[in-house]
Amino acid sequence: MQIPLEREFMENFEFVTFAGGARLPAFHTCVGANDELLTAEWYKEHGIELILGTRVASADVRRQTLLTSSGETISYKTLIIATGARAMKLEEFRVSGSDAENVCYLRDIKDADKLISIMKSCPDGNAVVIGGGYIGMECTAALVANNIKVTMVFPEKHCMARLFTPKIAEFYENYYMSKGVTFIKGTAVSSLEVSSGKVTTAILRDGRRLPADMVVVGIGARARTELFEGQLVMERGGIKVNGQMQTSDASVYAVGDVAAFPVKLFGGDVRRLEHVDCARRTARHAVAAALNPAAAGDIDYLPFFYSRVFALSWRFYGDNAGEAVHFGDFSSSPPKFGAFWVSAGRVAGAFLEGGSPEEYEAIADAVRRGAAVPDVAELARQGLAFVVREGRSGASRGGGRCCSRGGGGDTPSHAWHTTVGVAAAVSIAVLAYWYGWKAPYLAN
Ligand SMILES: Cc1cc2nc3c(=O)[nH]c(=O)nc-3n(C[C@H](O)[C@H](O)[C@H](O)COP(=O)(O)OP(=O)(O)OC[C@H]3O[C@@H](n4cnc5c(N)ncnc54)[C@H](O)[C@@H]3O)c2cc1C
Image 1 (cartoon, rainbow, N blue to C red):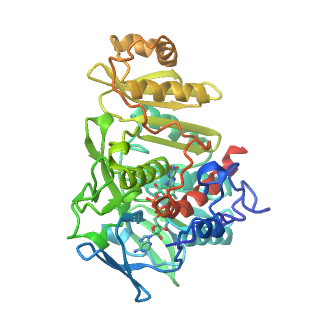
Image 2 (cartoon, rainbow, N blue to C red):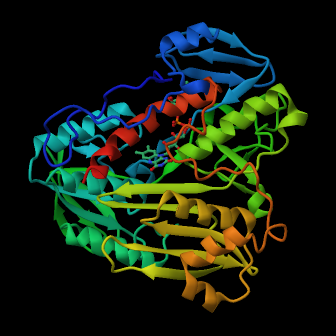
Image 3 (cartoon, protein in one colour):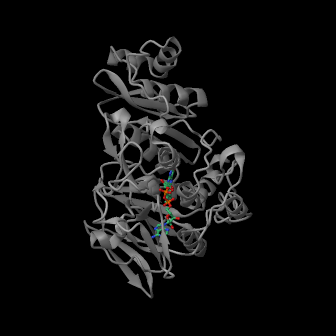
């Protein structure tokens, strides 16, 4: 486990120049109830023993024990698994070179430190970013902000393929291209040429050769389930839990990236969501359920994702299932557009770029309620006004889905504060550098 404390780990990763220290978020990421900072003292004061620099090497669910890398055996009555996910390696796709000096992954603080130091070692250099998802897009924006020329390579037809429609993706790709980014889509890196321990060239499946001073790999993550394989039921690459975040063993709970849980809003479909908001809410729910299962009930979570790159900022709520209905102005400055996903006559998901807090809340609310869409063409015509008006009039309230406690919309306000402790704490380190990373763009 890493220390769940805030630290200035993204130092010198400033926008445009390397001057100055890290910009920490305008709020604290490591907080409990009542805005308490989760310092080492906080854990002590609350009777929580924090064992740092130690891995759990094996787990015996039947005997209810954990064996640490230092040889200590820890017994438990209740276990909460919050082991998160790890970055997938190139080698898993039969490409070698991950251990080259200038190949970067991004999952923990060590990775972030390495990325920064490599970036600093090749000012005005060329980066090849492998992957067109969250990590690829966000790292590219950061690299560009630091004067690195970036070529993004990914096999899909467009960026953020799991979420974006082609039309939404086109907007972001054009924006990135206006910042000098080159996209190479529909192919993949087949090998990396290494000289003196460093990658010099990325070779694509179609034979193209891309000069590289550094390579950033963002090709997905795998849940860290290995301690519990063969002991707990797995699903969707994670540890399967019920609505109380309880695994197939009643004394064991799983939360965050590692947990696959039923999403009420999707009719109980089991999903594994890799997002901070989800980590916090599932952690809070697991603790509530462990303490008082009857009162906690089943988790009722509204999936929520967001990103901020360059001067752009978007949020997505719900599921991108059904027909995508675009709205707004994709060419205005600043841009303001989005999409609703309509399934069985109701809003199942909503995406908005450049919204205000009220507008984001309105689209979240429409998804939460499963706002009725009698006429898709009218929805496209009205766009955001549809949900704002609809929300105010409460037109479909009662007829839509019920999702009262569902998440989403928790911006970096303190509404999500929790005293969950370990489960939430382990998510903090990564979260902290993620916000530290993003802060510079906000200043742009
Ligand atoms: C670069 C990056 C960018 C991201 N961007 C966003 C974003 O834009 N928005 C967003 O909301 N989310 C983002 N995320 C995702 C978010 O960080 C995760 O969803 C969140 O951190 C999950 O929390 P977690 O507690 O489940 O796992 P983690 O935060 O991964 O924590 C897992 C913890 O478990 C520890 N651990 C693992 N195995 C063991 C073991 N055997 N023994 C002891 N300890 C162990 C790890 O060391 C770590 O401390 C991003 C993630 C990354 C990597």
